[in-house]
Length: 291
Image 1 (cartoon, rainbow, N blue to C red):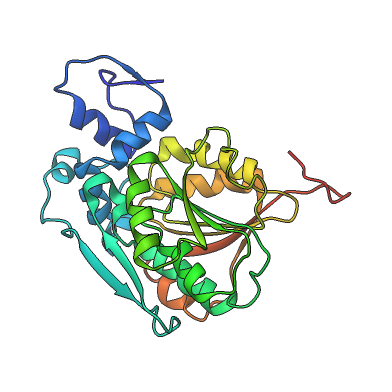
Image 2: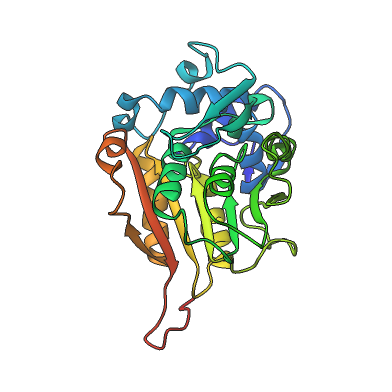
């Protein structure tokens, strides 16, 4: 457990939370998931995410200069609406409301664009009759793009995130007339999978889910719960700090991971420190899951 009054440690974004709340005078214990939620919905955290997306930040030290990053150098994107076709891969544009009021997932992030384009290009016709769940969906960019541009169904496609993002997910589903195809649901990493979400979906989508180190084991736990023997997770993230690679070290111990090699955009986004992987459950020689 992490307390508001404890000394700063090398927790990456966790340090920002402690700095933001140091004036509260409250010494309350926080689970990693509660800490993650509080951080994710903090404006200072979104400023940090925006600043650390700059290419030069990928080579910075693991520990941030907190006073520098807590003072926003510029305003973040104001609430609005974006229209995206993913370089013409969608015939009908996807409309997305963006609003950071409830958290950083309220805007479009680069790994989401990369993953959406990959799915539209490489999996346009092979998702029929497959259950699909998106993790950390934010406003639903990837899941909605797949629902709009790929052959999916008849099972609904689930876009999931924490409670503060549900209203934005639902608004974007309605905005794109996808209510019959896409369902928004709450899924907190590390918690038991809710009964209304498929336990072992065929396809799991996850973009820009690696940015808060204390949540890494929570995400691994959720992936272990979701990945069945025939499941595959398409996982895309932007390396903002060296600490982000610690997630991959954890994941490689738990799963079978392969870097995607059939994306023609790979050389372009790799220059922006974005990586795309497929993740599967490890299996023993009998073909059974090896947990």
